[in-house]
Length: 120
Image (cartoon, rainbow, N blue to C red; front, side):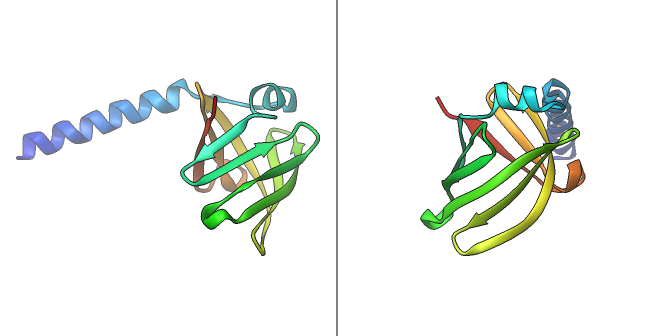
């Protein structure tokens, strides 16, 4: 049993590091716009479209309308967002991409992250 547990942990570590190593941080606004802007991003029941002109629109859980605005600040994507009736505080996020997976890392890249898939 201990051997199976150790093998499972080893596999998670190897695959986890592979995913991190393959992702590319988007450090410039131009990269972000070329890669993410105008595309439908999906995570579970939530979807977003981040427009090139600084707008955010989408639908969250329970069909809550998502609206907001964004700007690029140095190497971070900074956004203000309202989901339904709840306004979230401004946050600047680090953005990484790996294939069709876009990872947004809260609190200037030091917080929790959410991964969206670029829909076809």
